[in-house]
Length: 348
Length: 242
Image (spheres, each protein chain N blue to C red):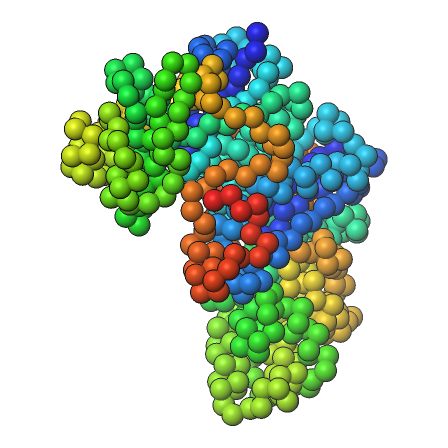
């Protein structure tokens, strides 16, 4: 029986550790520590080598802090859940090697976790009653993925981005508007002061479930270079860009709900930290589906979601061995790209 | 007994060994840059071959850089995890270049230069001499061209080892008078780290293993560009060890 899981996440530029403990049949979050690397703001994006170096010096103190906050000694931990991919391979390696050493030298179970699957589990930490079937939308700096989740451990791809991820588009547009990195929070803040008055495209809206944000990003670039007064118009450009992204994300999610007949939508990933997106989604799905989204620190890259996804797989009897490797392009266990759903599925 | 686990992952050929200072009881070597997958299983097997387990250890000695950035992190992240589980263990380090130079001690007398290919026309290099029971560092580990290394070393070493020496074989042979020795014979080994534990100045203790950062030998490329453009050190760039 697994009663205590230590989660470790180092897939990008956050070093994170968390402890989950058994509370009856379900896990409960005992602690979560996230150390964000601020050095990358200087470069306007994550520098992989610097991220890897920072993880190596941070991982020990971060794990210590998580155990201390949970009031649980390492000896009491039954299993280690660690992000094995996808992500920056140098960053992943630090977490995977540290986790494997804890498992081997501490005689603990080990489970490698797929980072994107963990994003889907994140809301269950606060909403333990959340159960499939549901539609999941994962939006982050590296991914935009619309999924049919008929049950835990099974995921069917409905649509994904053909070029830039939504979060990547936010970062690039923020750079055009001289708002710094990462781009999501400053654009969301600025958008509250502006209006959606620039006529930006809603790429691929109404054309299946795939996404494309590259053209939208280029449209913003043409707008910025097209003679606008950037100081005066910046807030309106931010509001227009954000509205265009949200319309696309929401429109396709709504179409997925209509096709699957599911009554629940799960929003995950760093872009889902945006309250504006959650509100926009909820408003447009009123009467059709309930939108479930975790609090921001559980939606950003964090070890609590890794521990929670690991808990699920450990409960299924799965274990990783000490040959576990970090995999920048890790295949997602349980992910199906075909067949597509039929539209005759009954509502849950 | 004071048994040590030794980890060497700074180059393309990795190895682990277990033994008392001066004498390895078992060693496993693994290649093909499969360090991340192979290291923990190799440690387990090395301990098993020596009829020991983690609780028998007094400490861990890990090869420090300069060397492969990723290899160094694999070695130290693994060591840190083991140390976290067994907090009475001590951590010691020795430059991987010294472990490579140590490989010639049986057949060469005099100073030994160790050179790793650092790409971009440079090598990570150092020059050592073992006198009696102690190591003397004649040229501290540095990153430079082979020509610059030769300029810095007033007396030619007796021999040069490592893939960096092999990559510039003609220039190195003119310098030392002998053909260089590349991997596998001229590669660092974990068993050398075990032997260096018994040699004066062979290894150094690490006071704060959790926050320890290896000597990388050069900054990240983006950091170097930024510092060149701005004429100052990158803010928040860690401990400054390179």
